[in-house]
Image (cartoon, rainbow, N blue to C red):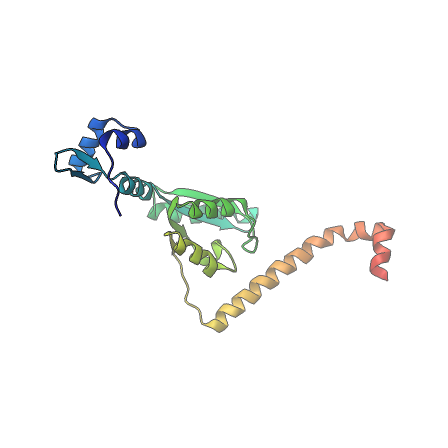
Length: 197
């Protein structure tokens, strides 16, 4: 049920003068009624709700896996900015399998707080290699639209193949990264003997 309040109370809650409320009423920005005695009453709840919805932002999320791909990151930014020029841009370097990326977590917090109206990504895997459907569901539950510009409709088989390739690529790069510690392990006899047993 809509609650209408006196002009003085509405002015205090909204932090404006009573004359401003009258201007807003004439402009159709705030709902008001007149009592049988001719006094105004204002619906501040719907005004606050409409003001918070209209202040929600569009976020362009761009991500690459490594610093070597900065050129592709800049390409994503340019393409998305051409379509959504007045939007906030989030650029991030990190793995699509890592759900602890700082900027992604900050974006999720903003979505849950109702601050984001729309998220635009270049490809689906820019948000996450896995779990995109969950991320999309979180957006839907918080009235946030998730737009994927270059969306590919894949058969279930092709989708599984892409997922397996992404996993293999991730773990092979991790194994390759561990090779730099091979000599340290061989030089540390305690660790080396553990692996020999």
